[in-house]
Length: 450
Ligand code: SF4
Image 1 (cartoon, rainbow, N blue to C red):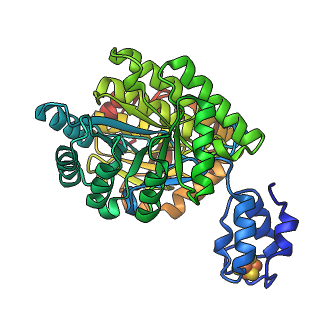
Image 2 (image 1 turned 180 degrees about the vertical axis):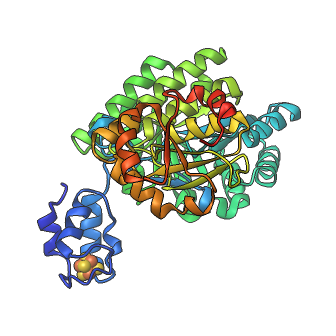
């Protein structure tokens, strides 16, 4: 059962020293209870209290890590059923399947697409996360050879090792060393052997059941054996079954704290259909409904990009707008005669406006004012993008040292503050820019200092 902030406070040393980054033990305890900070951030808490609090405040879906270092992939850690209740924590991972029975060119193509299909959107790098390597014929040499090829050629790929042979998996895990792959899978055949391998190698282990009940049996056995980092595959190979299992597992873990299903899921749309478009549709449903990892048969830009975009939308924090830093941004190499534009720091606005300016090829200065992530009109209505605040920002930003002229282009939607802004900035001419970013290129090409 989750502990309250007051219960956690009783177990803290109550020094109120602030070394945890929070000014008081009470505030720290409240944050631990809300799952916003780890108990380990307090250097003075006893090991016993750490264990009690850590266990009680752990998320109902366990957090597991695959890989190591900066590019490690994290799944799970979820605490709610619906995004708007709080937020979804760790985005669904995309894996591409390669197999020992594929032709060399097919394998190379998939590895190359894994490395090259990368996109930047609102400042976030979007890409596939994992390569799933399948031992199709139980041939240890072929399997480890393929694993070595991926290790050598895709340095930031996190790995899923798929084999029915514990010995083959052990050989491949050894080869991976610190790359810490996900071992797939523990089914009824050799639970003890795989549990031992996962424990000895400190790798996460995927459970493969025939159905939900069977999956529960296996996770109970593995957790009784001391394993904690598990992923679950309920054996579902149709969209309906996969969706049902994911929803049942998430509800059981969150609503009733049912631990045997409190693990991220690994799903195989690649085994549910031969049609790439249907595979994409199945994947899109499973991103929205709780898949921890999705294994795809291939990566193609026209299918991967929309899936990445869906993932980005679902896994952003609905309570915190995405922002860019308040600053002066130079676009297309501006000089002292270049136009000066200003807008808010809502990242979508920034990327749309800066993209249009860039596309215009007109060297420009773009001032980004901190509006706490609110868009232009919302920020103005909330009192965060008024004439007084813009004037203060202009004076302290340093833009007056960068340009000879004194003309500021404001968003068309802020036309109403032109007069106020001229009073606040008597040295400056205020020009009303277009309402839509798409009209900026034509506007800038015509622009001359007033
Ligand atoms: S570091 Fe520990 S003792 Fe110090 S304020 Fe934080 S919780 Fe309290």
